[in-house]
Image (cartoon, rainbow, N blue to C red):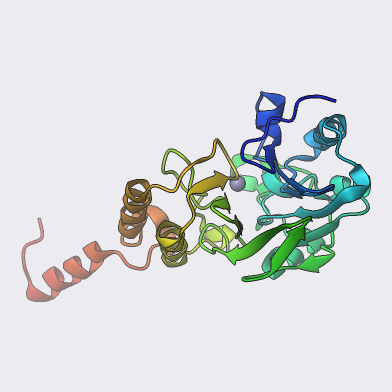
Length: 261
Ligand SMILES: [Zn+2]
């Protein structure tokens, strides 16, 4: 049996365990002999991740859940294969992630970005159950409480376990946030509310879906929130912005006959 490199008690992260970058963060939470996975990443790393888990002496038949934090390809392309390799597990995610996963919505899942020549295979998968705000996932004697934290995408989930929050694509250690994209259903106002909720919570540690874990630091969160507040009024964010004050100013200037040059 290889050494389990616990990030926190009862929590392993598979990139950290492998000591190299496999893809998005894949968290394994275990208690007694049960365990779950939060995200599985791309299909081509699923077998390696499951081999790693087997070598850590977890029984594959004791996997209770495979959780999709949201339906982006880099988090869930491997979900169908993982479900086949871990038949005892229930696949779960937000109701708004269920449809794009089942129907293969290639735009919402980022499988297809024609303007950038991105086109990847996205195996269709039907979630066994949907979960939403307040739902609890039990693993042994641990409880993970589901938060719906929309913004990056409306289906974005986070999971609170004591002082830890598996925080998805809400915020990363450098203050960056999950991609803001109109085609993805991003909503900057919702994003700000989700970040405020995280900032104002009792959670001490954020375990994001990309990069290392970090402290729930008020200054980091505030800096990111004020950046997003500016984005709401910037043309840079297209239809994700709520307004563009320059056009109102221009209109006033046009009406008043002011020489705008
Ligand atoms: Zn992501």
